[in-house]
Length: 93
Image (cartoon, rainbow, N blue to C red; front, side, top):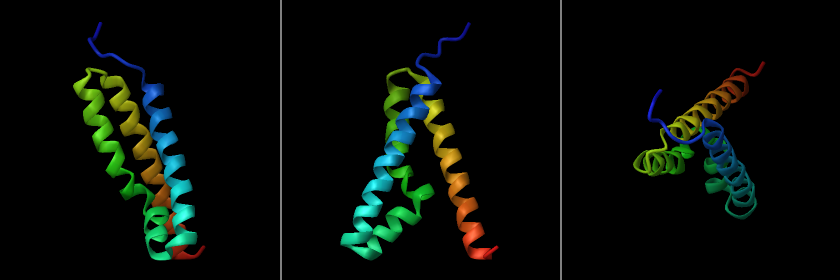
């Protein structure tokens, strides 16, 4: 038995919830301030590090390592999907 606390699903839900807010903010910024919005919306995989890393430290400090693992898994899936979309866009096919 391990001493790990928390729920991996909670980490996934927190990260993808933050990603949803991130996308909504990106759409709003595209309308309001085009260059900033494009960076926020288009750089999803990298910009999400601004909120995922502090959340990971927070949950690690609280001893909820499974939540931290869920955050890392969700952030990795989001980054990989983002890279796949950008690759498809750049290659054009």
